[in-house]
Image 1: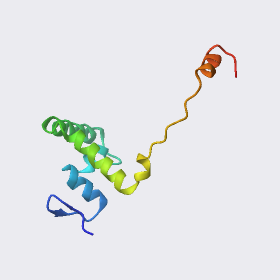
Image 2 (image 1 turned 45 degrees about the vertical axis):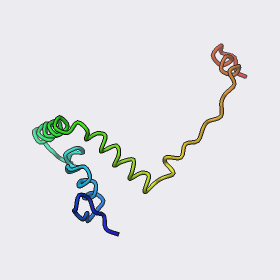
Image 3 (image 1 turned 60 degrees about the vertical axis):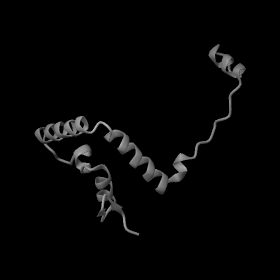
Image 4 (image 1 turned 90 degrees about the vertical axis):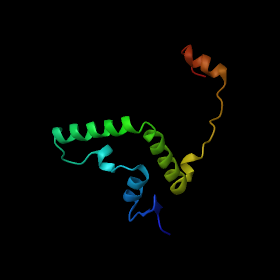
Amino acid sequence: MKNIVAGHVAASTTEFIELALGTPLDLWLGVEGESEMERAARLDAARDILADNPDLPDRVSQVAAEAIEAHAPELFNVALLPARRAASRRQYRDGVAA
């Protein structure tokens, strides 16, 4: 199965994410060993991109949620915790263990 985003075939997972977001991951995550000057320039560019594309955080969230849903759907399974009795909470609050 080919991974096609915006008419381009992604050769790797990283390339797929970069095509989906329209920016390289290194822009957001940084690179190991970057200087303070490189970091400042990278963050400045990232701020410019966010200013020009205010919907980018929503797109990123959507891509992340879709990736999780496709590859680890069990992370979206939510189990309700059993309710604790109010009396037990009062006893602990008053310093008395039940």
